[in-house]
Amino acid sequence: MRKRRVLRKLKINEISGVNRPAQEGAVAVIMKRQEDDIPAKLRALRERRDGAQDELAELEGLREDKEEMNNIETEIKDLQAAITQRRQELAMNKSGNGPAEIRKSAEGLMDAYAESIRKSSETFAAAYVRACGTEVGRDILQTIDDAYRTQVGEPTSHDLQKLAAS
Image: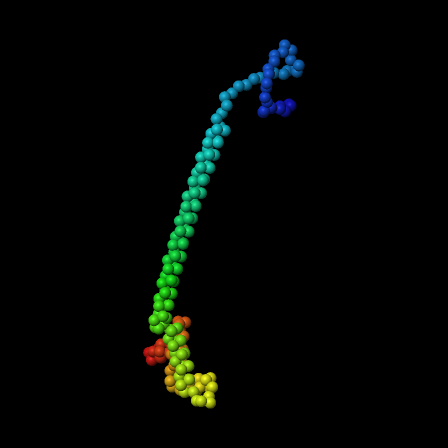
């Protein structure tokens, strides 16, 4: 049995009738059918799908925007807290109550003390070393050390004495 060839896309411009066919056994069949709306329905479904995808993407973008807004608000609150803390630190330093100011003042006091005990033939460095060996000099150096420890968050000599006593 021969394989039949089926023409799927055939356009007929004209039909003629003959009394004797040129091809033996040939049969002319004309078929008519109604055009389905499948392409139109498919197009409409695709448009609905694309619209739904666009809406979902827009909603997803809004969710991401909201997350970013929340993150930015948190960052702003953290920065405001840091600014407030820094202002308080600066206010303490300006008022003379902060450890940096105390340390600076004690260093100036040590310099003045060394200068006050300096002998006429002695250099300032030699007088400073001699001042460090006195009771007053040791107390001033302890103040400088405690102020530094307070600045960096370490325990002071007073804290260590309290701990040793307990």
